[in-house]
Length: 315
Image (tube, rainbow, N blue to C red; front, side, top):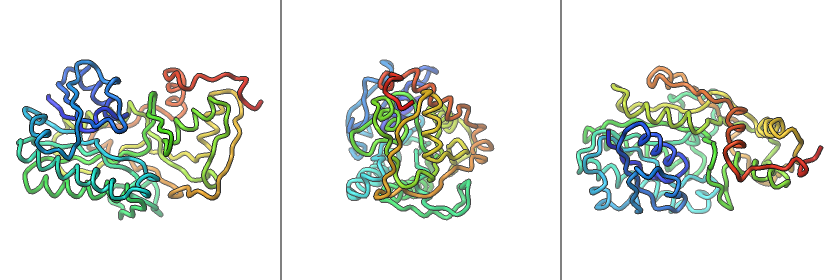
């Protein structure tokens, strides 16, 4: 098959692109490199730098493509609170532009990487795809709006759509921006440098962490499974971990204690979020294979940024 991956130089996109070319598929990537790095792509991936809202550029990249993975997005919840206009332009406007270009090019399937953040605060956990959505940030609102556009335009123009609501992805070589960094690489970096681990709130808020290899397998399955048009599917580990438990795991792998600094002045986000992944098992024949402990161990083995000297830690 031939694929286009928007946002394909980012953390998830690059891992997916490399997996697809290594399994014999043709892959094109579009990325503006605002957060991605094309140097991580397999040389067989055809890379184009550009904006997902550039419809004429999309027309050229979509020629002969069987399926599109739409991953291009701004992805930071805290940043979206500061810059909601930009998040709407890119995450919503980019989705509309892509669907319009797909309509014109005659591409028949799109897989949208949505987010578990769109659920917001939910009383019933694990949260199923049928839950009433309660997005609590501009980022979450933009991802939910993108879902609606993909399904609406897809239905109007007979473009098959599959939406994967991906929870907290982590793995080796995940980007670590200077602000609003994902929690796992941020904690590992703080630990590696001998610094304090800053935990928002009391550390009892929990999240569903899913390893990058498991996410890539789910994305790959979504491209080939039949009879799932308009499906919305959670992709997570199915288990939630509090921030305190996450630090416990890091300490267990390091064999040393780290200093925890609790910051009650910063919001900790929703109190709990864990995915019900039963639909993924049914529709995609997919389940996660890598535990949090195993995933953290893989990061420490593979990522040189987190090489740690035991002398840095509190004994």
